Amino acid sequence: MTKKILLFCDPGIDDSLAIMYCILDPEIELVGLVTSYGNVTKDQATANAAYLLQLAGRNDIPIIPGASMPVQEEGTVFYPEIHGQNGIGPIQPPSNFHYHIYPFDSIRTIMENYKNELIIVDTGRSTSLATAFTLFAEQMKMVHSFYVMGGAFFVPGNATALAEANFYGDPSSSNFVLKYAHNLVITPLNVTRSAVLTQEMVNEISRNSQNVYAFMMDPIFKYYYEFYKKSVPGIPGAPIHDLLTIMVVVNPAIVDYIQYDAKVIEESDAKGMSYIDYRPTSKKGNTKIAVNLHYDAFQEQFRIVMLQQ
Image 1: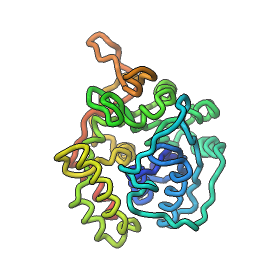
Image 2: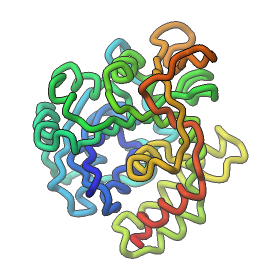
Image 3: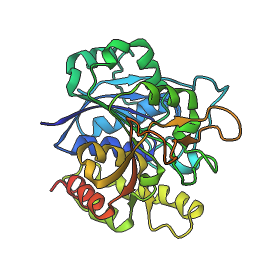
């Protein structure tokens, strides 16, 4: 049975790769995309998602614009130096292409249609997902499970010394989701920073004529990798944080877990920092937190899907 995924995202290069992977993996049925601010503006994220779906001829997948700013912040910061001016590195979606968008209430309809088969994955700021929890509380109880890319537990952050970017971008919404999401799995920087895409892997995919996204793999990788070469000297490739979260849905065994309830600091110099009570006498929680990646298994799964084997 396919994994029916409703993806909350902010494409963004690694979100774009996550969308591509969902389209290409026969074990995944992508039932909707909720787009919001984060790596780029909400409008740009929506256009990028539509462009990626159109390339694959998948205009049947609903695109649902979500939040344009965080709950408690006055403004947002975007990251063209990481993701490009429009979010897909040097790739420029056509300026004149048309696409259909769906109202936010479509999230409720999707949950009612798929009920316990639905898996919600959030790879961006959690503002839109927290809003959906507030508006559609009863329907959220129907969802099978939740996967969130965010946090950094006992490892450095990437937005600040302590905080990962998604949790830092809207810590109040992240805290809300961590509190109310059931069957929750978090894929933090502990594992995503090791999910490195290399030039060798990209070259192999770029030569694969069966992959509709092959033409853009090399240019977006090179753009993404340039940032990481400067920010993480010696890194052999670019970590694909959001895509790993999708892969874990299909193959949970590619990471190891600990099980604790997680929280996010909402204010002070530690804003966005995720933490758990790791003392010997603390109780185990209900949230699975990925802490170790099996890289060979990750690489093999990525190759199989992206090479359409």
